Image (cartoon, protein in one colour):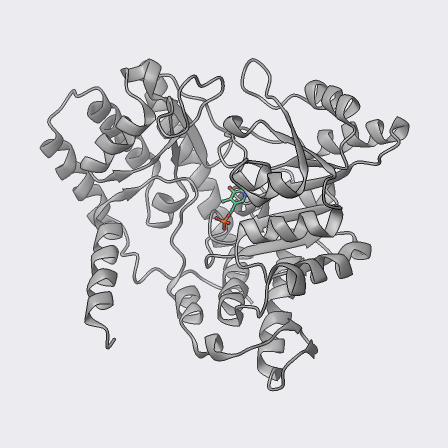
Length: 416
Ligand SMILES: *Cc1c(COP(=O)(O)O)cnc(C)c1O
């Protein structure tokens, strides 16, 4: 690399990633193959449009690449349609809304502090300016509740019901949601559509370890860089071929210009990796590790959400008298990266919070096993309760992290 300044920072970041324990639930480490495709010469190619109907010449090769990415995405999620062009999860959501809604139409989405995403109607996101968002709550136990959803559907008569979250630790009953929407639609004047944003749990869906929303939703959006372990990007899927044209034109030309064919090549590789039995084994281990860490904190008397997926929430305010912000900063000092997060019924502001979100997708990719997940719970607890000096804890974190795989050389099997 010619640029010494950037080369220096790349080396520093690789070291930071290798030295620490990454527990941010939305992160993961892609394979070297994925990163090679992302850094490839395909970045030089303009390909506005879709395979075999582009606005530029010279697209034969990128057509084949994008066709392969689409085919693999459809196979991975058992669906009839895939658009692999969205640059990010947020852009996938913008396009999905545009494909289904007129500006001003009503969307029923989860109360944002209970685990929604900014694009699900936050005042600081385009979504709230363009559409009329109303919000359903979780029940008193912090769980999704079909009776509450049914009541809100009848009260609000939305055009779209939105499920899929950034910090919801429990299983989601997509089938139950479909049934509630269907029975609402029987007597509603505004037929309600069903959208799922599976950005966080897409890898669990791909591995067949939870309900597949594609069996029930009209449209499904996702990121490709979280549990799916691909390049940073977005994805839109559906089983409704009648929506295909609308979704395609909502991505290009409505929300985006030329597609990132180098990233689409990387997505194709990640989808193929995700189709392997090794990926299912990996995802099972993610669930085991997450639960083991959650349960060890329970054993030590701390207040946690419990978990059915790759993440859980630790109530640091009631467990340690710390805000989420303070807890995040303390853990960072010993080399454990997490993020502060609102918890159900949180009384603190989003920049303080009472909770911490902890996930095991990234650590498990590097080789974290169940015993280490339990040790990590102990390290977190010893750090936040100030039971041991930070230097001792930092050394232990370092010892665990350096026994794991190097993030620069990770690669995963592909089964043809
Ligand atoms: C992460 C996330 C997104 C957005 O992804 P970006 O690629 O960061 O835009 C959208 N929805 C949910 C539920 C997410 O968790």
